[in-house]
Amino acid sequence: MVQEVVVDDDEDDEFEPLFSYQRVCKPPSDDDSDGDVTVLDPKSMSKKSGNKVFPSALTPTCPPGKRAHEDLTKETEDDDDWLPPPPKSARALLESKFNEDPTLREIRQAREELMRLAESRIQEDKDSQRSVLQMQEFSAGGEELAGKREKVLVTIQNKDGACKSFRQLKDEKFEKLFSKYAESIGLPPQQLVFVFDGQRVLEHSTPKDFDMEDEDIIEVNIKK
Amino acid sequence: MATGLAQARLAEERKSWRKSHPHGFVAKPEAQPDGSLNVMLWRCTIPGKEGTDWEGGSFPLSLQFSESYPTKPPVCAFPAGFFHPNVYQSGKVCLSIINEGDGWKPSISVKQILMGIQDLLDTPNPASPARHEAYLLFIKNKTAYKRKIVEQAKKYPSLP
Image (tube, rainbow over all chains, first blue to last red; front, side, top):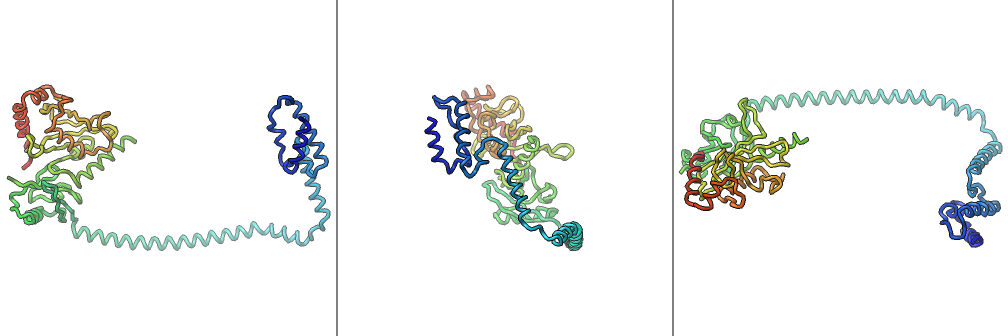
């Protein structure tokens, strides 16, 4: 059993550094107890890892990871030593830039804010001018409407459901409309009875009397 | 909220009714003494169909809506004592389409209710009688029943 495992490991060498599935999800086999497996695997790995290129990745416990980190920092320090130190003047320049940056930014921000303010003011001015114009137009329209008086579209429906629509002033008597309708169907107006919402509509009443709205229906019956 | 729903639906029903409704029918929220409208109580009129014993009559019907409308149907009632096999002594109409848990669906419009009741006038349903005397007369003595109906139509004359 043990030998087989080792052979497998050899075959999988290329993938092993990333993650060892053996350690995690190897099912407990009939011969080996769990303890055996855990003891066995790190051994075999450490044996191998000693020869391999990635020592830290293969070691299962945490400390080696730390060690790797230390190694890295060491390396960078080494790099610093190896590289010539940056020229002091450039460093000073950089520092001064960093020092200037906040104030510059502040100034820039302040300027932008001012610009924005100015723009918004201009926009507001334009808007207010427009709204004033609109108000003037609106009030003019309102005056016109008031002068013109409101109209309403009423529909006259007969017993068969046939409809005829008429537009007339809300405060105008129905007289004209009724005679027009009577004429259109070829019957004398006296023979027609107009009803709105169950109430009789007489010639001298107006749409306003019934609070009529556009498209309201007036029913017409023919006296027998 | 359920409160707004009933009112909103009724406002919609009234709006569409004003624009289009069958001839001779009336359906409007009750005007209260102070001039405002009670949108939960509608005063309606159903005309008797032409060519039937109900012709010439315009029968007053009230629709009492609840806050649960349109989940629940309105209570539809003629005046108390209205003579019809499917109308209770109280005036309440017994009809499947306005019966919760029977034929009522929230999508049924006021127009459909009123036209359904108009149909019921001349075609009573003897399978579910609500008023015994009217039912008996309808089953046993058609001429006496007819006389009663014509009399009732005269009691509620149409406008012209």
